[in-house]
Length: 324
Ligand code: SF4
Ligand code: ZN
Ligand code: ZN
Image 1: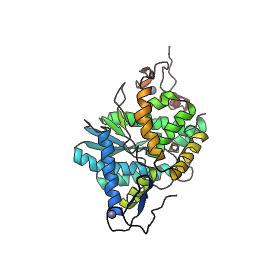
Image 2 (image 1 turned 120 degrees about the vertical axis):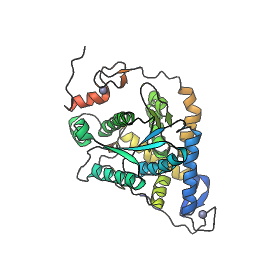
Image 3 (image 1 turned 45 degrees about the vertical axis):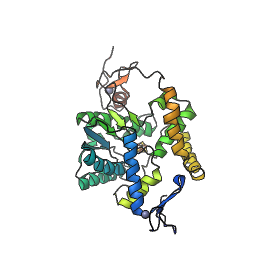
Image 4 (image 1 turned 30 degrees about the horizontal axis):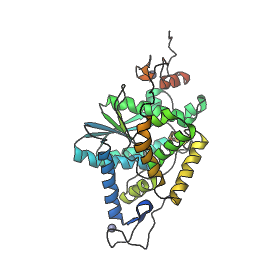
């Protein structure tokens, strides 16, 4: 549970009462100075990692939750300073489970697009691809979050390409990325670690992908969204996040506990991975890609059909082709 604390201490920069403590930096901020600091840091990370250098049209994936709606607002401001075009993409995944989760998430995303005047596209999975994530959970023997992740990656790529975007931005925050790094170590999954990047260049038919919030802790994103009055869906997905199984969830909780005891732990983990480990695994042989015989998109060269088309065949939303 998140809360904005009212401290009796003063802001590090002015005489106003602080509303947030940044333990790893030993700073306290009032509302105004936290917002200023947060926005400056967002721009610095984007600049340091050359996230939008040369970008003409940026697609941003917006689920309606705090991270992606915050990213939408930050990118909207940046697009006006840097002069790139911005388009939002929202996927209505068809997750209901008695909570109308996807319907409400989509409504929050649209509310933000319209308030900012950002162009957007809503992709309804059931209408465009013939299934919902709830249906896939029942019909396919695969963890639901893994199916959902595969679906989101595929659809976002396709739509970004259709819309002529050269860059695709997603709202992964520091806690997400720290969890992926630690899960990669835990599983000894060098290939996943090699693929985990704040900026993935455009290559092999994939659009350039960026994670502009990857060094910003979840708590700070939440505080920024609340202080700025950004509307977002507070509720969590009824399937809860299960990519990588229970161990992955336990790793996230442990990392967050460690962060409380050792402020700055997650940022060091991610930065050290990026700056010291990544250069040593750059030459890990990458997947050799071929083209899916159905949709023509990139796929592992040993597979004739990509994972997404295979999923659709299992769900009977694509006819099974006769392959050689
Ligand atoms: Fe998809 Fe799982 Fe996230 Fe729900 S928790 S939106 S099913 S990845
Ligand atoms: Zn202040
Ligand atoms: Zn395919």
